[in-house]
Image (cartoon, rainbow, N blue to C red; front, side):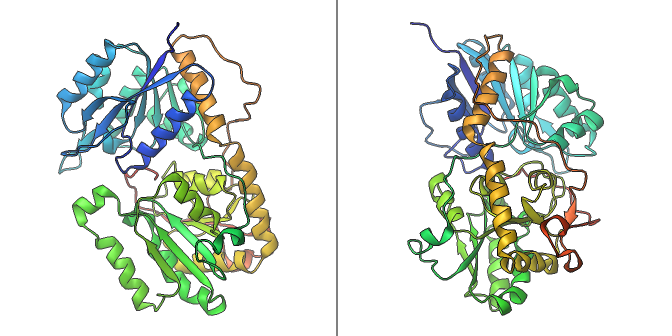
Length: 437
């Protein structure tokens, strides 16, 4: 019996609590289930000093901060039946930052020793990169047959600011689970949210989420809409907790108390399964991503909300600007509680507009299903490995072009219709190295 070609994914992987780990699990499952005859092995990247009970797909474990561990993994993959290596790239898991900020790239040693073809997916693309960060991306690009980004804006940055070969660059959006749209009211009773208008934000908690700006917007909102309940869902990011403990979460709890919002804000301090996350999204009336990093190029949480057909309010970071174009959501100004308050009230007080956002988001999200995305990746992997191509007539994916007026923010003067709700925002946002999770 002929054995299936193997794709080895070099990434963090569950049960490590990491957005890229979740992405890699979903991606590898969707590729294996795409009918393209590709099987899965994982080279899991461990954070320093950690140990995990990995599933059977994990055949190699890499110590993130040990350059020799990276080289050993490459040698072992070379001697295996692996046909192609998929590198899920994020600076924070492929090296370390010195105290002076210099990036030490351990992936480079892995790539130099590896003899298999490579396809890389970039989870962070920084505009105006420092030389050391640009060099790390260029090294990965030079060793890759193809480089995947999740938005076209990132592809443009890589062409123009990193000097990468446009023929190697491919845009495949973030995948989402296939979810049947369900009116929130049907599920609220079961989850004890009946008679509440539910706002939510989920993900691993860190200061880059900007949740404090939504909390500060709520006193004005709840004066007119006292039934509003804002759910802040997710544990503190493990790296943040290791460095700062629960400082950020505690500051949010203190802010809620100071503003007397105890009846309108609830923390769900858990790392939830995909099924649990979807249940929370299904009872959500409005989803928010108030992130502070203008240059964030992906957000799994925003992608999930689109897949569930949720009206969305977001700051105009790169991924949101592209994903929420054409009436799929509203944009609020960076770090501006008043702007968030206006956007929330606009959606709460205009049911027809909220319904339009729901329909637009759900239709867009269907094209991002993991079934479609996995098929796109599987075809790319087979091409890069020199294997014959599978044709899938049901593939509905397409590259999505950024809207020219993508960086936008709501203002009172702009209210009057879905197409006129926006104005340009010139706020600057602090550049961060965080992944879009």
